[in-house]
Length: 476
Ligand code: ADP
Ligand code: MG
Image (cartoon, rainbow, N blue to C red):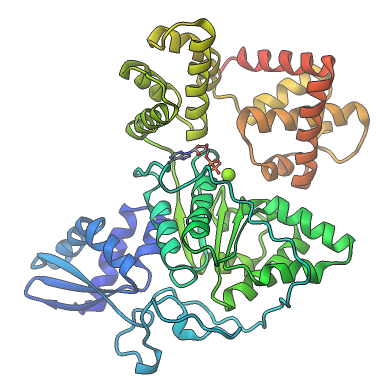
């Protein structure tokens, strides 16, 4: 077996034992450089990959290699210049801390080694900004320091941190995906804040894709698109949160693509988050998808019980709250979905204890969380909500799903959208798709409208309360 064959077979095994995101991220452009006296030297594209392969994946690698070549005892990684290919011409070799290019054209040698991409040939579309008001949209509450690292998020965290140390040169773009409330925004903001603090001369912009869309639409209306685009030219780190909302918005995707390319060619860092992988975002233009997939993809998954416990302990300490381990354990056991819910539960317990003037203990925690627990136990589904709403208002599901603006139908539809969002945290685009392929902004407006009306109108408040009660009493 040649080294190449051996590595290919080993990769086949490794791929089965780790997540896809990890596999692509760490094993892309690796190769066996030598195999002597039981030691295998693996060529990797950069120091970051070396560290992960040697420390985190070394057992997987050795196991896979051993099963194919029993003499293998250990592995070592060596950083290869230029895309992990052996014997690359000298002129293409360059270390990662090389100088930034000053022109708008991307020199191949500045592409992070190992993550080969098709060369981008479009010219940057951005021109100089005029009279811009620059907003970074950073919230200093989110830092790397107060981000708890655990097995479910360490890859994403490591990637963000590495980028903060080497902007634009390591992984571009970085694409982070994971479900709601798992810390995507926290990480992205932490990265932005780290740069803002350590390298204040760099321009950082954080923006959600929804806000990006609405600002773009505004600029189209006021005929200032060029200025809108120009404002992005001077950004060193562009962070786009919840990019799944670009789904179905062709014009926005097109403009975003141009901004993306312009920044990319200037070696500016782009970091993106989404609630799912690029592949799983419906109606994402192919060229954007392949751009997103061209960099590094890191996932955040749901926290384990131990992680949930650690999160609660840390958050309680941060709040200066004394809470016994039985109580912590009870919350961690019952609140499983995400970190946002854990924070919510803790806040609720604290408020309850303050209100009742009783110190926090197991029985207080159980009482404080009883409502929340019924809900999570029930695991209400999208279909349940739609069915209950349709029965409640006496309209059929078909009518709600169909296009049409009849008022008798519009209100139940909006309420259903509202409940799907608030009870299940369903992404706007999923709700839109369910209701006959409506745009996510339609859903956003519906949710906002009901939220507002709920505050101002007693009737709506009562409707929502009855619907929620029905939801809780649905048989599972
Ligand atoms: P997402 O953007 O993935 O929906 P957020 O970043 O908004 O999630 O996280 C939800 C809440 O949980 C935030 O208050 C955030 O600070 C907190 N959080 C999430 N993950 C962590 C973590 N690993 N350590 C500390 N706080 C976290
Ligand atoms: Mg978020």
